[in-house]
Image (tube, rainbow, N blue to C red; front, side, top):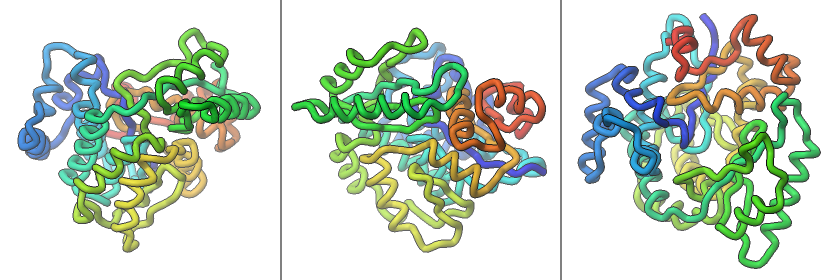
Length: 342
């Protein structure tokens, strides 16, 4: 049996190729029906209907009030599908809204309560849609860490943020990428000042608000008013948050967990790189398992491991050689890798 840290993906991972993911992989029809009931009670289209649509619609499926529920359910279904005779989960973490999924996977919220948290926050963010996000790399295609480049980009960000009426801050430290959040003036100024990279960056993230920034303070306040303490429990598995901090099983942390989830996690930067570094160094798993939907988070996990110098990894080539010899990273959204753990 191999030990594994499970990693829950965030927004932007349920796309056209993921349409039908719940129908193909969700292992508990009764649970899915209960989640659909939550959506119906809120006057929202059910996950089953969204997932079963004839075609993917960016304007429908990528909306925060729909995407959050779809991604949460796909993640939870994959976690429930893990073959516990082959995989022993030693910790759980997530990226951005994947934190809500991680709460349920780690047992810090029931499946239904975790869904209520994810669906409510996704709906509130969509309703407000304050600011936006863009993503830009600080590593090149070889994934060799270049800390001086990262420092230059952050210095540019701080320079822009100091200008009148410009808001710009680090939203997510995402492996070899920086995700920035800001208002239109701040985002446009960064796009105009930075040197284009790899033919497609800096890239705006559609249907994304200024997540993990002070601009989300009104959304945090609404979430705190809507989501009671009773939704949060004690984790049954170690849970690594967006600061790289571990929430240990059995600790009396419900109030603190709610405060973090509906406070810091919403309005401050999310350090996914630190979460992966903690996962590697604290738990030293045999595998890092990224649940579906999609497989876009795998590269960021690998880059975070390289940045941490995990097991001598120093480049993309070194990581790929390690993967070919004995897989370290398993993406459940890929059919050929899913069978290794599900």
